[in-house]
Length: 141
View 1 (cartoon, rainbow, N blue to C red):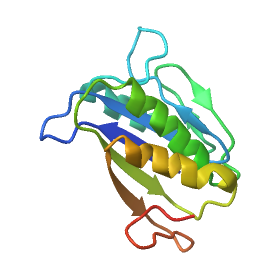
View 2: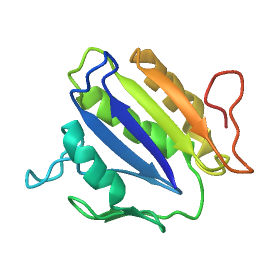
View 3: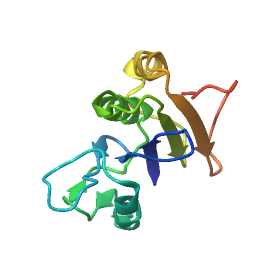
C-alpha cells in the first residue's frame, strides 16, 4: 500500500487528507455525510485509513478504488497538490509513504514534485520494502 497524508504541522492538526496510490491515485473522502470532501477533521482520519484494503480500495466514506498493479509517484503527487491547494491552512505537512520504486508515470514526476515543493509544504518520506528508494533527502524516482 502506498499513501500520502496532508496535515497541518504547527503542533495541532486542523485538516487531514489522504491519497492512496498504485498505478493511479485517488483522494479519500474524509468527511461522513458531506459528499466527497478531500480534507476533513483529524478525528475522521482513522476511520478512513482503517478502511483501506489490499487491492487499492478505500471503503469510507465514499468508496473508491484503483489499480494497485504499479507504483506511480507522479499520480500521487498530482493528487497531493490538489489537496494542498484546497487547504487554507498556512502550514502544511505531507507524509509520503511507499512500499516500492515508482515504476510508471515518470514523465511528469519532476514537475509534480517541484509543484508540491513550491507550496512551501514540509514533505517527509517513508519508504519500506526491498525495492524502496529515497535519495539525497528528496523524493526519488
